[in-house]
Length: 161
Image 1 (cartoon, helix red, strand yellow):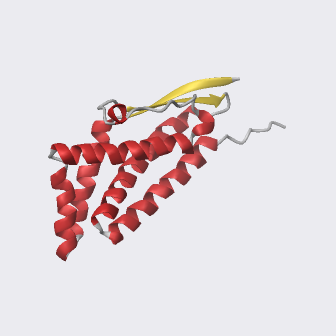
Image 2 (cartoon, one colour; image 1 turned 45 degrees about the horizontal axis):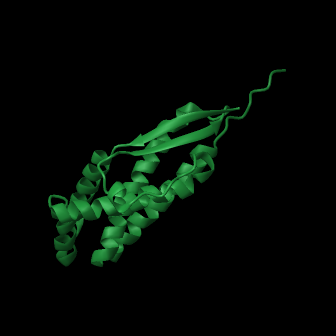
Image 3 (cartoon, one colour; image 1 turned 135 degrees about the vertical axis):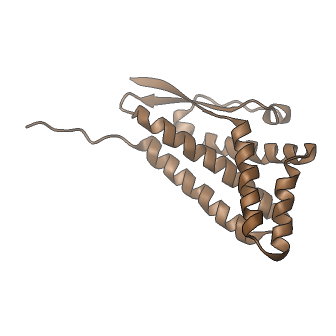
């Protein structure tokens, strides 16, 4: 038997966290990197910057379809306009009956982190800040590993004597 579960990640929360994280990096970076990192946070207030972040976040959100493909219904291709919509990211999972529903919340948090940190890592890569890119890219990959761990988790049955 199987059951369906839906995970929704709000785009407005993703963009808020991208902005907040980029501001944090601007505050701790020194020299030229501080100026370039601050440019990331200032771009979120522009139409072009918002479009760029949507594109980067949408690409990372689409990557999650690959990570979780075993549990997702058939994924259809979407147009660029669909990807740049303000619709939230929604994943409809089909899991077995033994899947722990308590795993949905941590899986959702890791998916959110993957999108935020991955999109920001991509941005830092585009503007040539290798240190921040490498750190965030590693954190995004760690989130993928945790997603896999959580989604495959099954409790050990308790045996009675």
